[in-house]
Image (cartoon, rainbow, N blue to C red; front, side, top):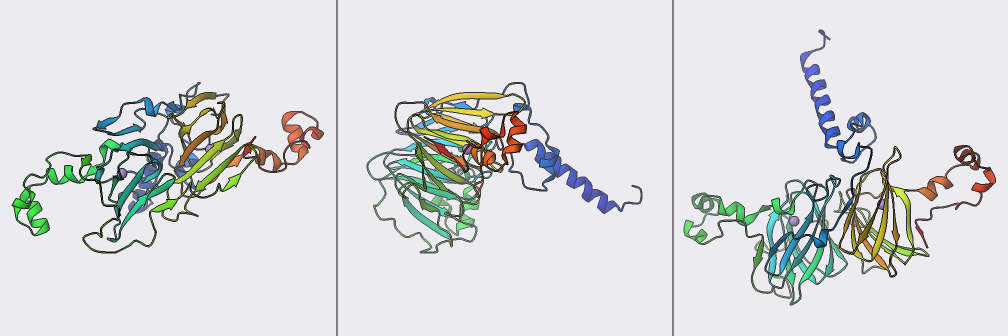
Length: 388
Ligand code: MN
Ligand code: MN
């Protein structure tokens, strides 16, 4: 030890600190060889005898309301288990804009449920994109990229935002009015090469939802003209045919293989017929955030050590499954149910129970369960995914 050069010792110490910190943060996606994962420091919230609740009634919460616009959020504040993903339900009234802002600590993935939305986004290379969205369309803004959202047309719009960090609050974003309102006019004048008087009457505090005229149907060019990014921020998700069709339901899925810019988020949309089951499975590399668009779903969660919890989610409720935890979703209502799911990974991965069983010889299964091998000949030979 005494012979170890000081700089090596410091490097080793720094490595230990970083690994410990990462482990304490809990739900960062694990990669092979990641020492924080090997250490497996238990998260106190999910280390008890019982699993905590994984349900939050998002649409029944009040959130932030300005005129006919609102934002309701589910972060670790409202749903403590949801450390890896936060979500927001937002409505904008005609003429309303979620002002120019960025997020220091989260990327933004969204799916439009009703109405039409226009966004602008800037990247660190100075490329800018303006896009229009309709129901079923998705956007993705990487962490820190500046953007705005505005309602298009004469009807309100409603969309679900999903953030790849459960500690991220939609009410703690870096908004342009907040920043400019707290910067001395002298500095702003110098910054833009304009007289100080230009900034007279600018808002002093964060506007958050700005209200003005309904935007033109066709977006105008930006001040700098056309300078488009290499990868688009828009993906027309639910207007496609279902990506996979099963006896009891349908699945749409968009990760970075279909939507290259979406490097830290995957969206999934499930339609389950009455009685259908998205089978028992887990995600090796991501947490899961669920929003019930329609219907009534019984969600189960298995957390090891005999810990098992079931929650019934209704329309407008949110559910959350930590990375690696077993879970299932069953339509227990009498009509179609529709679930929007967000995962904090750009590459979707799951292991389904039926597939796992099918991947083993019958003698292994016989020994494991203490039953005759012949019994396991009856099991599915491939992935079930949705059971009708
Ligand atoms: Mn945002
Ligand atoms: Mn899942």
